[in-house]
Length: 397
Image 1 (cartoon, rainbow, N blue to C red):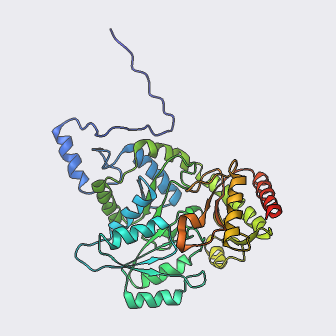
Image 2: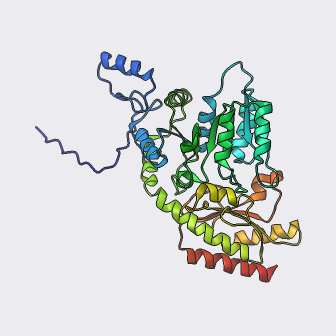
C-alpha cells in the first residue's frame, strides 16, 4: 500500500514548534551543533533544545527586532523576567557594584530591586528621586560624579504618575561617566521613541502590554544592538530557563503585526479623553503627558514630537476629604464595570482601569486616583460613557 505525500502550502505564517528537543540525526551533527552553541548564535544552524532556542520563538523575535529596528530581540515569559535578564548580565561576582535606579518605576521592578538585587545579590543600589514631579538633571550629574554608578535604569514614561523622563539628556550624562543604560520602554514603546537609536544599551518591554495588546498572554522582551550583550543574554536566558513558550511566541508574532495600528489609535483616544477629563468638574487633576498642565509635557513634546503621548491617563476624582474621594472612586468603578472593567494590567485593545491607592498604598495614598488604560473603541462611545458617568457622580456627590 502506498500513499502520496501532501504538498506543503506556504501560508506565510511560522509553524508552532512544540518540540522539547530537535532531531539532529547523527553524532557528527550533534557535535557540531553543541560546538556552535558556544558562540550563542541568535538563530542557530541546528536547533538543539527549546530552553536554548526555538524556531517559533526566534521568528517572533525577528518580528520584534523589525518593529524596534534593533540588531536583536529576545523574548521571555514575562516583563519581570525581561528585567531579570537585562540586569543580570551586567552583574559580576565579588565586586561592590553601584547601580542607579530611578524611583518612579513599576512597583514590581522596585520590589525586584529590593528583594533580589539588594538582599540576595548584594548590589549597591542608589535611588534617584524626582523633585516636584521632575528629575533634576543637575542633581543627576552630581550623583554620577559622587557615586560613579556602572548602570542606570529608568522608564521613559513612569507608572502610574506618567512622568516623562528627559531620556536623551539622561543617556548623554550616563555615557559621559561610562555607565550602561537600561530603559523600560513599555508605556511609550518604540512607536513614540527608540532609545537604542540614542545610545541606550538595552531596552526592555512587558510584551504582555502593547506588543501583545489583547490581554491574553504574558511575555517580556529585551532588545539591543551589541553582539556581545546578545551572547551574554542568550547564555543567561538558557541557563535560567527564561525563554517564552513556542505557543505564546507564535500568538505574539501574529499580534505584533497590528501593534502600530492599535497603539496609534490608543494614543489618539487617550489624548481626546484626557482633554475631556481635564475640563470636567468631578475631576481634580489629570496626569497625561499630552496636556500642557503636566509637569513633563515639555519632555514629552521633545521626545515624541507629534506622534502621540501614550495611551495611559491617571486622574484624581474630586471629593471634600479622603473618605468621600474613596466613595466617589468606588461609585465610578461600579458605574463603569460593564464597559470599563477593573483589571490589574494594561495595554489591552479594550479600555480598562485600576484604582491607584489600593495597589500602591503608602507610596500614592490618593483614594480618588484612577489609572486608565485606553483601548481602541470608538472615541465617541468612550467620551459619552465617561461624561455620563461623571455627570451621575456630580448629582450623587
